[in-house]
Length: 310
Image (cartoon, rainbow, N blue to C red; front, side):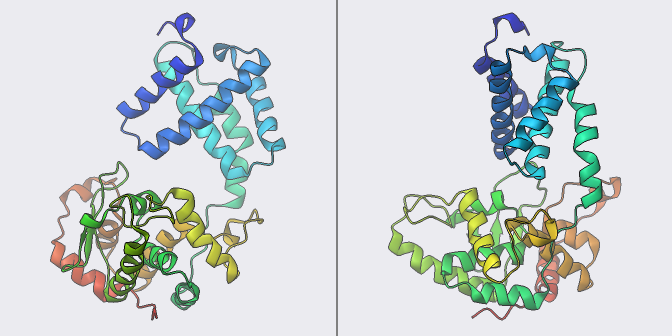
């Protein structure tokens, strides 16, 4: 790569292409590009060449982000993106080493280790209270589907009407780098709430086949799903957006933790839980485990808790 001939836009596009070739998800690529773009613009303001960035420059960037009032998780996201960016520059021979690693280790990891990665998990009774407290049928359907399937926010957003098999009560998710098994199941009470939402959805006259849409009939975005969960969780005291303690937060991803915890506590076998979560194979034995879908469905319906949704 001839850096002398590259402007910021060209450099970002080259990095984007590299992310695509590495098989990253579109959402991860969007976040990485956004973070790197802000960093490059900050460097321009400091008249610092991207090749001359060292620990002192990066430490100043940490201070700059903290002074903007960004949360620690956001700082981690920035430096994950920057680390990947400089790994790319190192691979291309533009820089000799990744200057982000030591700064990231010193200023971000200690905090993370101290705080831990514990997330709030609702008891079945609390989840029932949450879902039944939601007056808006779309948001009720979103929270219920997240809790009952353990799918990620991006996976939920991507669901189209044709992806749902109502007879077998299952959904075929879009291909994602982070997911192996694309089939998830739902139970009777989830089906009932989803069908109620579809009746309301028809009146909106959607411009898309997306299962979940906003008031304008467009596919619901990440922020819309986040609000659909946190707004009602905050009403019951399950979510405090002003707290720095992760145990005071309940977001869409917490639903995945609830799903996993409930199935584990119910005694479901580990390989079935991994299959339902769509976890990417990490152990050699995983490649030799084959589970029949009908068996998986029966296990799911046996172990997934009823929330008594009205």
